[in-house]
Amino acid sequence: MTRRPRLPRFLTNETARVAAVLIVCLAGHRAAARDLSLPEARERVRSAHEALKAAGHELRVRQAEVGAADALRWPKLEASARVTRIDDPITFDLDPIRKVILSLHPAVPAALVPPFTLEVQDDLYERADVRLTWPLFAGGRIDAARDAARAREADAGAQLRAVGDALATEVVRRYYAARLAERARAIRAEVLSALDGHLRNARRLEEEGFLSRAERLHAEVARTEAERELKAAGHDLALAREALANVLSLPAEDADGLVTTTPLFVPAKLPPLPELKAAARDANPALARLEAAASLASAGLAAEKGRWYPEVALFGVRELYKPGLTLLDPTWAAGLSARLTLFDGFSREKGIAAARERGDRVAELAARARRDVETLVEKRYREASKAREQVEAFGAALELARENVRVRTRAFEEGVATSLDVVDARLSLAKVELGRLAAARDLDVALAELLEAAGQTETYETLRADGAGDVEK
Image (cartoon, rainbow, N blue to C red; front, top):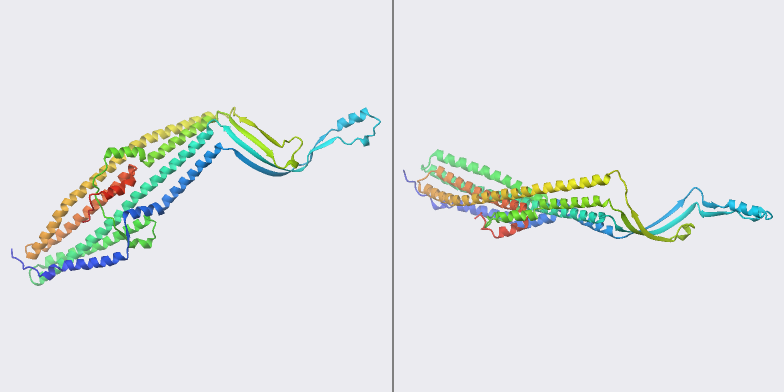
């Protein structure tokens, strides 16, 4: 093989100069951009996402309902006032007595004996009173109402945690999608810069007669393809930033300025699978919601059973407007009341049967859910382990790909390798770099999904901080 002459130094260093220009341009763009770390993104979602706010409102509603249920044990004091008109005044007619008196005393003129009538209630009268009612016993229905309110509060709390965990995972997914898109565009830009330099060298060698036209054309085709992929990477980055801005509840016009600063990483180790399964049984929000549903069903059964018992309460009333009282109305009254339903068309029996069925239904759903959650944890653990192995495999291939580029480039400069060798080596390196970053992204997202299933989302940052290092170097 004919040995090609060594290229001038200014040509071999052209790629470095182009890369320096790109770095300066990117640095100027970055200064005007909005840097965003992953912890900042997670905190932004916790404080601004509408779904999380709505879940918080729901929890506060249920907390207020707990207070309302607790108030059922307290006495109820009511004041009322009314003005009433009736058709005729209410009177007692004692005229028969008057006639008897006149018959016994015939010498007494009838005109001297007044009418024996007594007005008890005028046709227009006013009343005002204060009433006190204090339930003493309701067959357990008051306790059941309080337990039901607390079960709904627990359900709302679990729902809030479920929404928060799902959003935390979604933030990781979209954040690292944007991070991967940024790194992919940077790699595509490096490939284009390298192929630009290689194409200049190829044209120079063709002019000097040391390179065939076919090889130069191959370099041009590779350079054009690299430019197309760089533009496509730019569109992918814009879309990823738009998705990230959306989950952060940021205006669409702020999406282009988002720049991620937290690199992709590899955790030092995954938490042990048995510990994750045990944690999921205790902390998974879906299981917590079913536990709350079981408590609610138990409270419903207690309330239905309480319908068989009497309601006992203290009561008292005090009249505030005495002119409105009749001769038969007391100024005040107090006492003890009891009420018991004797027959209701078998409604109580059916209510108890329905409540028991609801409890059995929730128990079956909970048993199934526990199995499903354990299976989900194991599935996501396997996915995370698979992604981790992929990162390690790409790491070994990356060293070989970098060495291959160095060797092929040096051989081309020495005239013992073709342009096709250099292009293929550079493209292979980009493919390995992108593959490793994509595998790291899959690992980081799979880790977030695994912790979400186990109810351990809050430990993600700890695992990231203790990681084996980023994979972008």
